[in-house]
Length: 388
Ligand SMILES: Cc1cc2nc3c(=O)[nH]c(=O)nc-3n(C[C@H](O)[C@H](O)[C@H](O)COP(=O)(O)OP(=O)(O)OC[C@H]3O[C@@H](n4cnc5c(N)ncnc54)[C@H](O)[C@@H]3O)c2cc1C
Image 1: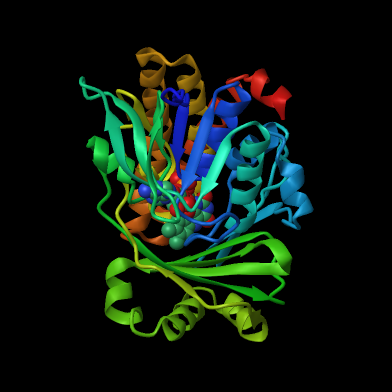
Image 2: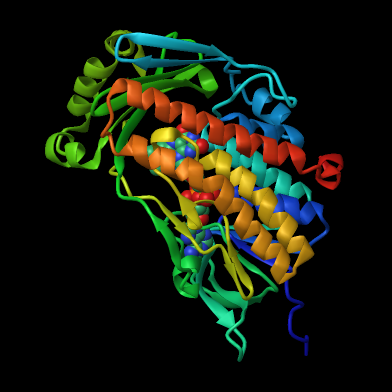
């Protein structure tokens, strides 16, 4: 009779930017890692995908930027903020090995991360859903119950279960992770893809009550989006997203709307109806949360992927150390870096600003992003870089 299976060092639930990156880093540290995702490999998800400097920094340090560039992800060297008719154009300053930003489609980014986790030795299982957690007599999490695509249930023993299972995290629910902060605002986002619109760099447009923008991405396409308060979406856009999208785009960014009208749309529009942000307790006995599972903020500041890549490293370091003190440090660092971003995002998502106030909020956001980058640069982690 075979004995009980040896526990994994970590079971990671979710194989997108947070889960795949965490699994890769744990495997590079020599840990035995299983990743389960109920979805399919190489697919899109409901998200635009502009990376900020901190996100590109992580991908560069992990040696993954060349794969993204090979996949045709264009470099972004300027960001233009349009406050009504006033344009503030910023050139990206080359620093810390980052000389351009990138906005890879999620099918590209998440696949690169999953492949890197696999190459580092993690076992990856798509089409497998975690449906419950295993606990010992003391209540400590010891693994999970997994349902495969054929409906077979099996128990997976693991020293640590990492919930990287997104906004509606089953792991967070199951462990009863406390909500530490809750947002008050939610922005609805409608986005789609166009070829032939020819704008340069990231384009962010704002008028009181709405935002819009264009993000260059793979295959010569631009992701074009609009954002409005959830209440506006419900009252005016829900029934006719295409008409609503066009009307908001014309009102917020008439020049971009003209280019879009002349370009060719690739595929249908996608709609995110909005959800309030939250910061959840990030670890407990035998479990931890990373990415949106533990910390979601309104997409109006396009920063969730960057933070997920940051927290993957913070959590991987804590998990490798394995002590309560290391996990407490993960929580403290995540929360200290996240709260200024969360608060600035909340204020922007409230749409209760005039354009000068919005510029001040963007400056606060920029300061928070600089602190985030400085913290990651200061975390010399040669083991991870050499493995890349
Ligand atoms: C409209 C919109 C626009 C956005 N735009 C940007 C942007 O421009 N830039 C940016 O940085 N961020 C953006 N974000 C935020 C970004 O999408 C998220 O922060 C990011 O996707 C979080 O990644 P994650 O890996 O934590 O979770 P997810 O990407 O949600 O992945 C979770 C994974 O867990 C799996 N899963 C869930 N439950 C289970 C289970 N029980 N068992 C097994 N697997 C499970 C799912 O299948 C999924 O693959 C945007 C978000 C939205 C909604």
